Image (cartoon, rainbow, N blue to C red; front, top):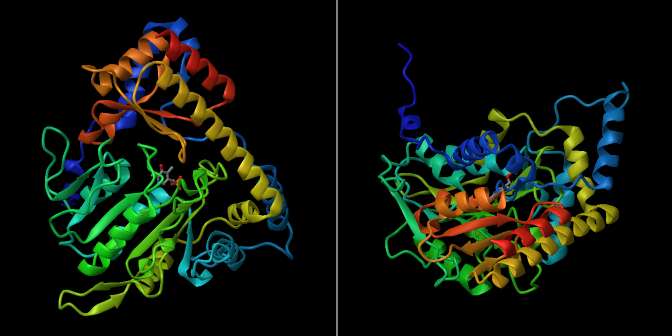
Length: 410
Ligand SMILES: *Cc1c(COP(=O)(O)O)cnc(C)c1O
């Protein structure tokens, strides 16, 4: 008999994006004219083409792969030095942060990294996740057996949910029960909120006191406009002892279809054995990564490194300005419509309060039927997301302007 991992059976069937796809399909089949007008502001995928610098770098890398003298087979599992050094220098050292190239592990995506990291943590950790949340953190904990069953609201037994509300600025309070692994994502998907230096300082202090580890997802770091908002958890003193940072080229360089990301594990970071003795995390991840992963593609890593070239930086900046210009238009359109709006200032997501008495799925249906715009219902990100919806600023300017007109006409 071949036994299955029964944890998978605990996963809620109605995962957010399939349910959205199902409703959109039903609508477009019933309303061909509405289908032609449909604008998608739902899934968090970029829309604009890759920066020229990245394309040029990948073209040359393809040519290298076509010549015997420059052909490359398997590369280092942790990533090529040229990329790890460019990351360490540009994202950290030039900003006064102490992160070295050998603390960086290049991968094919942050989604995989945030899920795979659980491999090196043992059973019995108390896991804290924000609510609302990027669903990957929850589902990967379910798959590996860190939870019980879900209740009617979709909350899993065994997880500690940290409520993010308008009152706390969508940054959770420090829990009053002990937790061991804490997922934080700032700038946040879905709320578009950022965490202040003081808030992150409090989390770092908590983690150090409790020997907990922060799993800090900074996928949207490039969208921060406000110079006072931390871009990296390592801007907080003491974070090297208690935090892993996840970064991705998906949203800054538009690499969602190219696939490249990295994680930072400081050498000082330690977990514990059952007997309480400390064990560095870096060698565990190094072993895991080189056993289960054979490196991101050379061509892709060349493309990612080009993000740090002078041209690449300017082109990425232009992409960010484009998306943040979209976000500003969406924020204004929703405010003008009398809605309470959050996010959209240091993040490409606008988080909007539904009009009184309308649930987030009702709002989804209303936007779909009446405005022919696909948004994401807040409840899909967790029960605290009920009463909100997310509009993504990842779109063409023409589409965003049209969405704004339709919001005004609602
Ligand atoms: C888009 C996104 C990522 C990036 O994922 P990739 O797998 O690198 O494309 C990571 N975290 C969050 C919260 C995201 O929204």
